[in-house]
Length: 159
Image 1 (tube, rainbow, N blue to C red):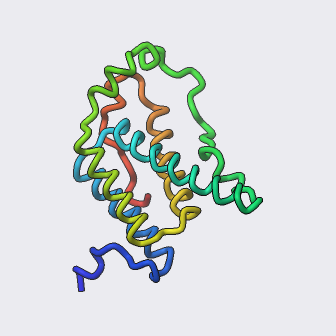
Image 2: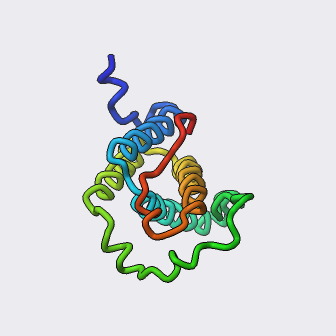
């Protein structure tokens, strides 16, 4: 019975089951691998772009518009207005060159496989990814230097 719960939900399964599977597996993987915020952010932003672009094309072709709350990141009320200059002055190439591409590939593969095999509706997938983006941005807003970008992502058990 445990093995049944570990498989990717079928396309015919309830959307909530698919979302829960995606969230739980992303949560456990990022925790087990102690993935730095920057790596999770890069993968999540990639999938937000992919899913958003696909939805935008479908909406455009059918003469519809996407819900406004999906068009932009979830606002953070207490976001620091005075971001640390030390992060902005740090060379982007150095940051990108320091990420672990293998870890990122594992998370990328997980997200791609769950989306494709479960045929998770893209609207729901985008909402879930926006939730992840919010948590990432919240944690990034507290980073005071480049080293903080490589701190493991910290998600509460209630996430």
